[in-house]
Length: 208
Image (cartoon, rainbow, N blue to C red; front, side, top):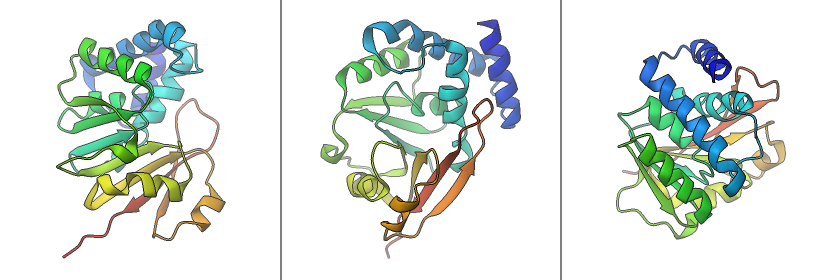
């Protein structure tokens, strides 16, 4: 794992992040867990732990500066991405990780236990069926649907003045044309990833 540690530490420095040794260790342990469970649970198409550093960990942490508030939902979290890397670096925030695939939520629950993350809850549910008494200040989605659909499926979870962050590859021109709400496109640069990455940010209007 030495090569993974080196690559991770260089990437974190590029982002201006200094999580200290416990943070780096936790991120590396998370990679090990994904690699260990991947064969049985088919969590991710990425098999090489070294590739996971860029494609999973650094890709997740690229959105760290754009989190809004302290209550954050990661919808369609899959193997716990981006939720778990973000939770490791933001212990002051409360994260809710949601996925409809029970195998994946079982893995994420196990990872939360093994990494002793006190700021993460894992929910096995379809997003449209999820009801919460307290709404979220940030809702994150990796590209599981088109932008109008993401908004339709997750809008009921966002607090007033809450922010929806949709992680995408190339800028989805057609989806944005179909979007009625104002949005901004934030280009992301991820160390070790040549492909385009961007974040679509929508803010829910504050009522009253």
